[in-house]
Length: 299
Length: 279
Image (cartoon, rainbow over all chains, first blue to last red; front, side, top):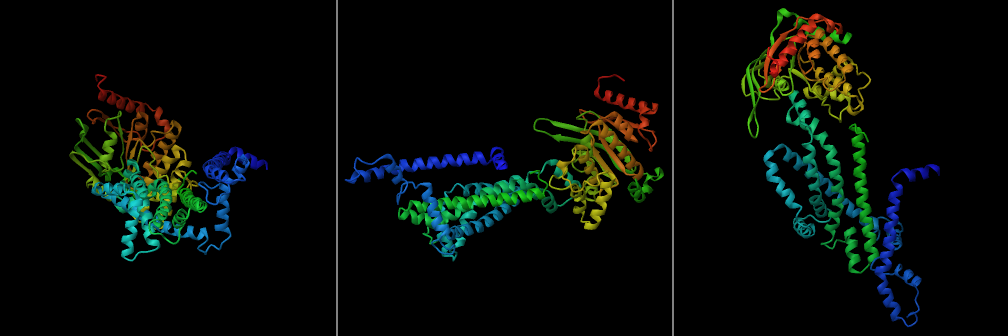
């Protein structure tokens, strides 16, 4: 117990827990405030309750509505418990199943986007004119609202036979190649003049300079970019599920929830989506730590 | 120091003064950098011959072009006039033939590579077998007394150890010509003395040609068989001092009258170059 108290005092846990506690408290207060008007209207319309309800009635009822404006955290937790733990993960009533549908598209898109991003960066770094030719397009691609272009991508790809996972993966890739390209251009050009002079004295060819110097030097820039990219990939996959009325996926659950006013379902899908994105970022961070340790990092 | 003996066997024949050939020949060399406002003359009418087996120091104040001259020899800069030959060919051909090992002012180790893999870097690029890479690396790491540190990463080493790794790296492919740009400039006096002594032993026993940039008069006199005194604005050679100190020398030589004489002449050259003393 002593060491636990010590870890709470010295580590990051205490500030993190404090922030979480504050957020949950704000959430509860918000739920009471946002839902109270409808509950009060109900009370006033009811002959028995009119004028006789107390504050504790109000709090109890605002936190246990069927279709609240803002569901209470415990309602979301209960819904998650129902849809994650109590159903088989293969059933389409399981939120885990939907999360996997979204995550698999996001991961495929992340892989494609990362490869595209790296390939573009390699081209830009090695061919001077490509920097001028490609960079404006790379930047312009990100100024188009993804919500506007996603339906087009799905329709166009659908007409040439790509349905299901691939169109969503393309949207993810479209979002996540950008930070990878920007980070890798910076990383591949990060070697100092001295390090380049050194390898020049060994009369290394361009391929060797890339493999022995530019590529390893870029890793410090690659991983932060990949963390941003993987979070964007999850967003991309969810956005890809919205316009098509997809039958499965977290996006489909969000859409279905909003059709039927199922705010608890929307919020539990949102919570799970952020968990999926957070775990993906954590996985990239884990890969980063392992790689950097192998490359002599101090951490 | 058995490992030094081994290195000597290979190139020992070149030590004999009778068989001297030029390793570097520079004639009427100029280098003008085009900057935004005015052209800057970094090197002006440089004439210098470095024979095989020589230990030549380039000494002078900042901005005298000593590093630039070394970089021209290494084909890291291009001269704008005059002629230069390294081992009888152009600097570019010499670089492509990996004729020299270059030791920079900073160690320039790749931080993601261990000591061992920093030393094998040139060997990997040359495509040597893994076995030969390891053999050669072990030999030069022993030479700079870093055995046992092979798995360490650069940040785990002191500045002096890092610079010794960079010397091992330059020696790993056994070039006949060593170009050293103030390699010990950032190190403290004690380590510097020790590395100077080791370098001298290495030179004496292997017969390598060394061109060594410094701004320390005692360092230049202690190490060199010839001292090239340079002066800035424009970078030029003001004096070349031949040293007749024996090749086989140690620190006692610093007390020698001859050492003081040579140091004095170098100092006079440096002052004349500055134009603040009329000689």
